Amino acid sequence: VCGSADPWEGLARTIVGQQVSVAAARTLLGRVAAAFAEGEVAAGLRPFPAADVLAQVDVEQLAGLGLTGARARTLSLAAAAVASGRVRLGAGADRQLALEALRSLPGVGEWTAQYVALRVLGDPDAFPATDLVLRRAGQARGLDSRALVAHAATHWSPWRAYAATVLWSHPTPTTRSPS
Image (cartoon, rainbow, N blue to C red; front, side, top):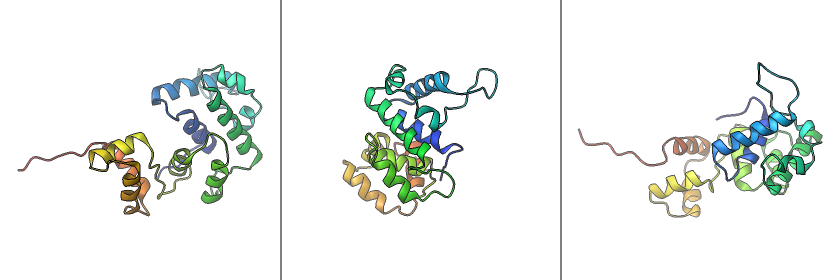
């Protein structure tokens, strides 16, 4: 479905983006990159800091950039897990092992695991059923609970990630006027 040019950055973006707007996540990630990135890609553009770099950063420094304490801890733990090889996200990574390792990290729940499966690991059947936009899209289609959205998604397997991307793009059903 998707995938990521830099799986570690994809995981970090997912963690930082939990329960905040895209704009807020972009701002926070920019601060992390400005504070800890090594080198420049182009004038003023910095690469995202490598996992082994962020694994060495004090959690309080991350929190000082505007991340909540819990989110800073999760980002730090994820960086350490990726840097040590405990979490493998790159090409050829075993999706199930990667997701199990991620779920074992404090602050990484099922939404995060499924979103990483979809956006980073390219799993065509990943479906973050608790996602707010997906839940609202389900409600707009008469599915009034998380359980109903998750149940409806079982019918889309093994292509649930594609359904999620369509629902994110079209959260409310469109009606066509008769010709």
